[in-house]
Amino acid sequence: MTMTAAASHDVKDLALASEGVRRIEWAERTMPVLRTIRERFEREKPLDGLRISACLHVTTETANLMRTLVAGGADVVLCASNPLSTQDDVAAALVEHYGTRVYAINDEDNDTYYAHILAAVEHKPQITMDDGADVVGILHDTKREYLEHIIGGTEETTTGVIRLRALQAEGKLAFPIVAVNDSMTKHMFDNRYGTGQSTLDGIIRATNLLLAGKNVVVAGYGWCGRGLATRAKGHGANVIVTEVDPLRALEAAMDGFQVMPMADAAKVGHVFCTATGNKHVLRREHFEVMRDGAVLANTGHFNVEIDIPALDALSSGHREARQHVEEYSLSGDRKVFLLADGRLINLAAAEGHPASVMDMSFANQALGLEWLLANRESLDNDVYTVPAEIDAEIARLKLEAEGFTIDELTPEQQHYLASWNEGT
Image (tube, rainbow, N blue to C red; front, side, top):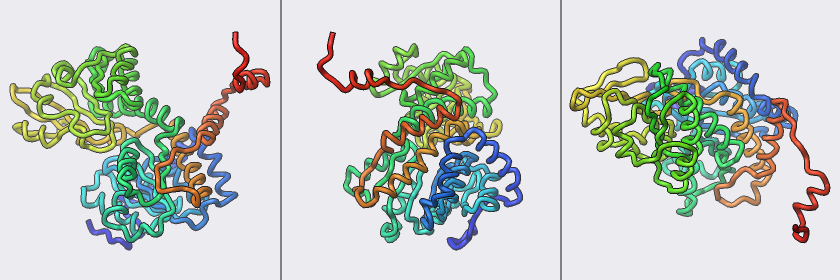
């Protein structure tokens, strides 16, 4: 890693920029809500002169969010929130054509990954924009001297919100954060429909497996797990759900899925995918009983959900079977296949969520940031959800863009819902 903190960017190859522009423009076609916000930001400049450090997946959809921030007048630095999710042509295009300093290279090593995050922190941001709370973590740990510049931040994903709420619970959160992930127009659509489709896309691209008739084990039945289980069922798979939450387990059972402990599922599963946000969901005792040919994937944010060191210790050796597929040799002449080094399979082996879903997620980012700035004087150092009226407006704009119309309450209905004295 030869990059210095003073380098204006660090991407794979600026010559890739023209292809990145084409793909960014293609994504924009199905991001009408964010486009509408960008057009307004360009007129009003609500972010004029604001320093923003964003740690997000460097994809075509993220590029359109960066364009929106820059249109609003912001000085933006972007680094990757995952070493395998960067689209190198997009990173080049952002540097060359869209006024964003980018520090991100696909498949960068661990040292480079954290050097890039540090470069974003060295921007001395007034606003942080995280997907996993890595920038916030560094600011609260080794770069506390930069906290004085911070107005607030946003957080994109479930794992990051969990970390931030833990920080808040300890009384250590140093600035307000908008939990974009908690918006209905984010997690109900991005996590469920986006993750459901893009995770299967990644698994299928990596393996070329036919899922019909296979036992697909989904670990976790949150919004991501719900989406994944539903989409796997649509492919003809026999879906098994594992859970630790009795309410979610009951929901999965009533949705028509088999529910059992992982110890039992490990013996019968063909394809496993973790979606919990926790660590070591698949571990040694599970690897020991898996059938020959079992495929292991993760769609949670960090690569800790599968205990890779334990898998490595159990195996007599491993080799690359094909791109994004590592073959581990276990006892009994069994082979187990780990996808994308246990990292986000939908971004490592595919392109992540469809742009039409990220349209709402990144609209939440932009409008949540605008709300934070407007209310900065009254906010405590807490984790906030995007206000319900912004959530509803994003949904309204999305419906309008898709050509749907809905009913409105009549005055009589409004009165009825607001009263208590009209019964049977």
